[in-house]
Length: 352
Image (cartoon, rainbow, N blue to C red; front, side, top):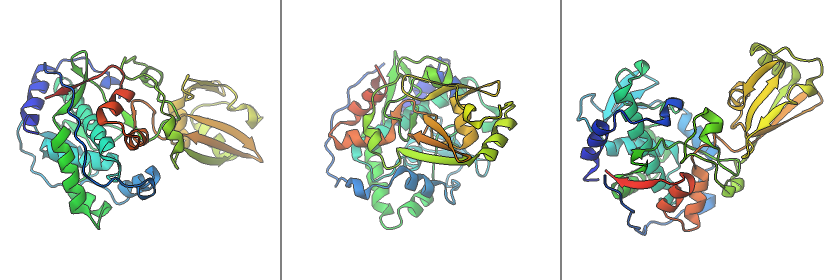
């Protein structure tokens, strides 16, 4: 990572005014393939996404382990639980971001892909904040709140996740960061907005369908491997009264027959619900997902015995890299470059 500090500073200074799709959310190099000597965990040894997220968000709240002063190449991270801003070196930030976003049991090539995606996302977010600061971030470059920035956990929290072998986990992750931590993804010379999600519905979604902004590198691609995830399908069941309360709070004037409430659902080619007309109110699939606590906007609704059943495919918004899909491709022998170019169409890898 010898070039990382100077590279980030250079990128922030030179690209501060770059147009980015993040409003809705040079030296090119092909990486040298390096075979990992680590033992690859079997599928049975890798936690499911539900197990991983449960561990991450139980008793979580990034601890302040760094002074707020630092160089321009460092990341100032807003800790949403405490409201503090801490300053982290690029390597320290990537360690906490990757550990918070992907199980460290995943294959090395998937972890490398996640490192580059997290790094690219952070660089693009930092550029945006330099040109148009967000008041709620209190001068920080990025937030640890995944609904605002991307998740981050401290070394102390990594130790809690991996109490038996945390030293080895951290050392191995640091070695991977050292190997690919200088790389980011670019499209037409600019850092991309490298969105990612846990599990697709079998195909990733276009940014335009979710956020209304077209991106040539965030288009739908096949990710059939996701269907093998134990977390691919989930269900949410609500009584008619519970669903009625939620919908009426959104201003819906519902017909007397509950079977008609969800009869007008429009879908994208990938299968995600894009829009719905319910009780005279137009709602997006993302809004419905949030209203009913669904893992994704790819869902079917049935009504029987006064109960609504939402059957949901995937986990997350579906745009960009599927993390489960990245793990599956890595187990098939794909490199991190293969994985990234599968999910981000037409990108190049740039060494800072």
